[in-house]
Length: 279
Image 1 (tube, helix red, strand yellow):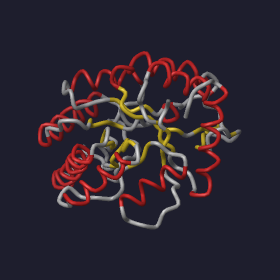
Image 2 (spheres, one colour):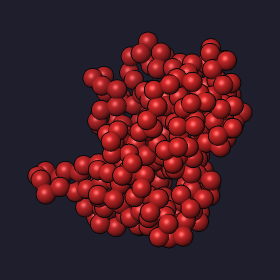
Image 3 (spheres, helix red, strand yellow):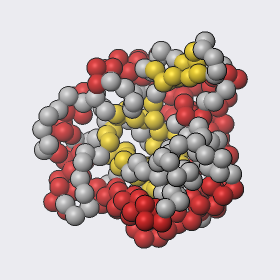
Image 4 (cartoon, helix red, strand yellow):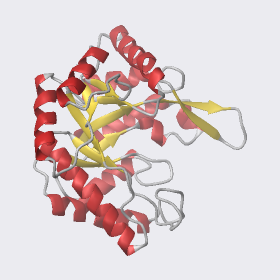
């Protein structure tokens, strides 16, 4: 079975029990962590217990924010926030906390910069990841990175190199093949990209994202994210790879309008059903 989760759950209550049951009613067996801070120990316990009772796995705690910014004060605050999110993930029973490296430029949080993909960017994140992990010392949850087009890791091989360089058991991999598609050759052979990701990163993958991408006939080169099933990602290969090679890894829908999640959910489940995979 692949545990499908995501946003789009129609619930207005802030009670963890209501939220967990709403995920089940919507057809999810995995979830993003509801809002909570590390100091709210009662709510952390309530979330952990409610989702376990409903058999809904908490896949990810969002820790979005760059951690390598040039300004020392900004960088320190960002790392403290990401560390707090990793601590929440560990306490609430989530698989991982996920963020992005950020940019070595000084004009945005994660915008393009010439040093982002260079050795300077690689070394900056190795140092940041070690600092964050060593500060939290998580016992269960992993620290992961979103794959990105103009930030590291921009390939499964670079992700593997980061894992080895960081050299901490608490650092793991997160799979999002759509974020690695940056050329028409990749777009027209997403099966090769998916298989390479699984082959290179399989032992470390802890969670995965589900979305889709299309190539527009617009100059210069232009890609757009779309609802799963409306683009070029080979979902038969993706789901088969998860089921065969990454058992237990939850698959999380994201980046859709609220009214689009039912269609995305149904597409993924129907594709799985056609392959004999229980989603």
